[in-house]
Image 1 (cartoon, rainbow, N blue to C red):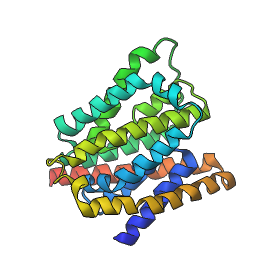
Image 2: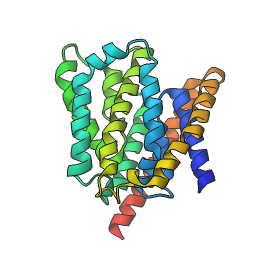
Image 3: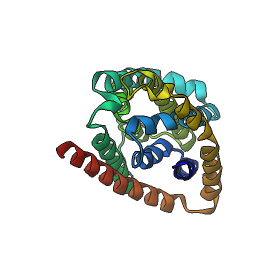
Image 4: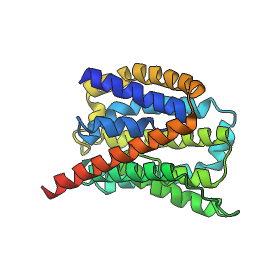
Length: 251
């Protein structure tokens, strides 16, 4: 199991190094094949928080990005608490099929290369709604991609601004999940388990190796080809997870 976890974190880090996102999605999706969702999320929380802080803080406009999306991030935090504490969170029997559905939708959107343009003046009113919706999904699945990623793309952000906005979004989502993983109701508060904390800290090494590998591959390989492989993989993994979760519910 240790070797499997190591390889999963290297792969997830490489994905993030290549496309700037996807580490939690890939890692959680694969780890839930061998672990309960709450434990899989807890194992990932430290490397995810670390890499997202780094992604956000190393960009050129950290302060301006934080100011621009402050209301959205507040909605994301509130929504995460609603999804995590109020709707059953990672303890819910619907968590696994929800994870698979979110992953599948995200993969299909990526494969379809959907381009949405947000009319001028809509960003302000939509930001808290998008943040809240993303947070509820995050609280139930620890996946904060939708609808946040679609919203950022619709704003027409440049590459650097997009990477930084994603880093901010995933960073806030990671920190907002921590109280949920420390709550006794979250499958025994996995983030307070010394073994899981140690394993999560240890996961920093393979995640960092994968991140560096991904950056090197980004220079050598075609980002477009890798993105299509990545989104296709997410779609198939999401279908499998959703099907497995539904079969458990109906068993």
